[in-house]
Image 1 (cartoon, rainbow over the protein chains, first blue to last red):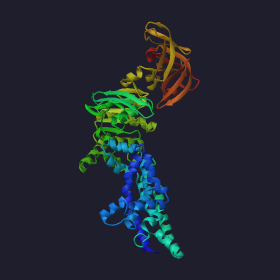
Image 2 (cartoon, chains in turn cyan, brown):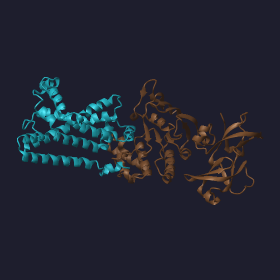
Image 3 (cartoon, chains in turn yellow, orange):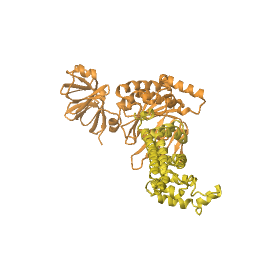
Image 4 (tube, chains in turn red, blue):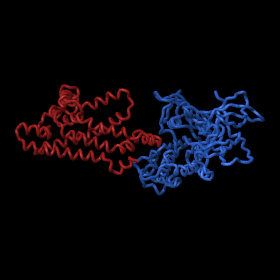
Length: 226
Length: 359
């Protein structure tokens, strides 16, 4: 068992989820409530990572983050280092890759908040911003947790993007899925089996949490049945 | 004028609501009355700022809340109204005291608590403060929602179908409580309802809305007894509206042929002969035997065609040559032994017959 890769993967998934929650809450709010007529185009763009082959996404991210791209140069001028083949580069790629997994449950949850609660809040003199935190977020918490957990789980298992952008450097960018691939390549089937089992069990536990959350057995969800 | 609302709201591909409302200063309760889909709730939402006017203005106590000419459109947060939603819209994740205190969270702790306790005391929900909305009955939810609206100290109450979410027995009780509360509050209120009992019980003034337009305005009893329009008569639930033709006129009375029956009404004057005949169900008395002398000019013999429960009352449809609806108590039905096929006399005064010229 390659614990270094395992810990690295967890760190990557955690960092990705944290960045994603910061991005997905405002983006989800906009996608759920904006009346912009071209919004469907934005929805399609943000859903792209669901259907694109990870290598395609990885290729574009590699080019976009590379030292010759504006993003790469900008990053280098500020932080003095490169994004590709680093942990930070992996986080950036993973954020793009897992974005729909965080955004879509949040959009669905925001969209299912009954509009009368939002209007009731306005009519009690409470601003949009505070209404968001005091009404929309609490009534969407199962969707928000689902988004965070799904993006975490999805990042745990990513392979193509990580390989393209990270290159599989042990201790820096070699995640569990790449470790498994490397083990199989070197015919270490028992090692690959153990690591695969750990990933399988981890994913199962995480998905169980997601489905458990959405079973609506908690007091709060019970309220909403009325 | 306390409130001037000239509302023109056109929904994309939908209906248009075009109504003017004037509410005089004072603590009067104005009822917006009409069938569902008439546009009552839209008017309320425009006043509250939940809908943007297509054209028109809303001016409250000299302060412009919305005016499409000048582009003024205050956010709902800036309009000091207490709004009661049809199903109350209590925040399901907050306890009763948190719901009531929701709009006054900026106040210092002590003041907020005393504000919550004051409105909770007034609405007699002190014992419910730590409950969650799901643990409340419909009547309790309504009181909590009213407390929440009042806690912020609004200058006007807007109530959207305040009683329609309640079951019938609760509705009777809560209606009485609401009427008492509105008197006690000493605050102007607009109540949207489609129920004529609500209108008569709660309203000082009444505005009849149909198809997005104001049809008639006035005190409820005047509107109900003197509808100026067949549409108003139908909208306010005058139970019988039939076509009739004046046969002859004698000593201030007009005798009309309606279906196979003849009836007397006050002579409307003029030369018109074809009218719509409107008779309110409350004005019709049913008798099983031929009554003796009475001041009612009309005694029509007929057969009970149907009995339809209507709240505490029952609509008795009597075929007297046309279908005449009487509104009677359940007690009266059992006392008279009314059932389908029973022979009855329907009595009503000539003055209870309202005539509208047929176009």
